[in-house]
Amino acid sequence: MSSLYQNIHQDLIERCGKNDPKAQIKIYNLYFKAMYNSSLRIVKDETEAEDIMQEAFLSAFKNIGKYKGEVSFGAWLKRIVINRSLDSLKKKKLDIFPLEDELYKLKEEDVNYEVDDAKEQIEIIKNGINLLPTGYRIILSLYLLEGYDHEEIANVMNITASTSRSQFLRAKKKLIQILEEEKIKKLL
Image (cartoon, rainbow, N blue to C red; front, side, top):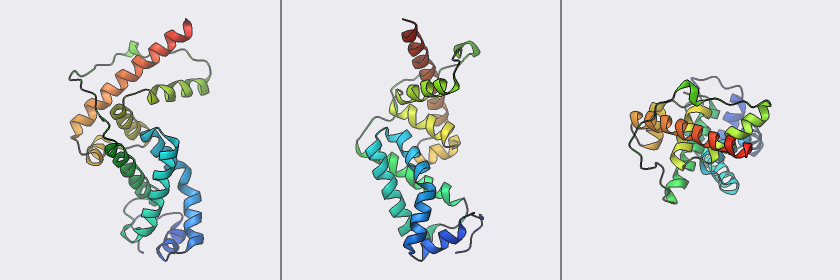
């Protein structure tokens, strides 16, 4: 398998292409945690995320011949995980986007948090993200946590890039609202 992208685990990837179970286990051990977390951020269910991650690995090993090395193996595998996660939500027929037509404008003063402990701040934000409506959570996760740009999100989710941008802005506004409400609850 010739590769345009030089993977640090190229030898393992090539051995996986030859159905080497030891190589597959090594690849799995290298990537499973990140792939599980990517799925969990989208589906919000630990068991489902684990199932999706397992299925994605099986699919990747079965179709490893389609990996052309244009991106890192991890990026290729993550794409499979994210697509399967989104498919899982579609099967449940969850509304991905709330019905809101107004675009939100964020101001500097909207973000004003005083949290001393960085770990506490991260937990507060993670909890806030988990409280977002499904579509907002997905867009925010793909953009901020997975590093996708709006064109890539549009392609994956079968929407326009402008819809991705507007949903991202709405997600940020909603997240700020949630964080403010949580902050008020703590004060009470």
